[in-house]
Image (cartoon, rainbow, N blue to C red; front, side, top):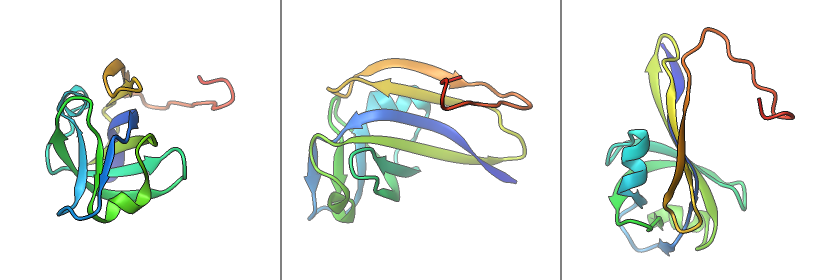
Length: 127
């Protein structure tokens, strides 16, 4: 089995940090549903401002709200933009869902990474 990207929320903005919380990452439930991330599912998080990366689990939160909780609160501050990713194990890549987010954590657009035999991306051209 190989591990492939399954879901990605790109550009969600941190609204609060709660160090004295029992842990995890809260995300707007509508964004989780848009890409298929379930409550308590493991997610990898990247902070676009400071480059920090961590693994935690997702909690469904209110619309517009994204919080860093517990130890993850040390990885960012309100206003930082994050990428949140979930993975799955399968023999071949079967596609992934991606949500792009506005600055107030609303769904802007979705797209799908297609399941293809060979996909070559050139970051310089965006294709």
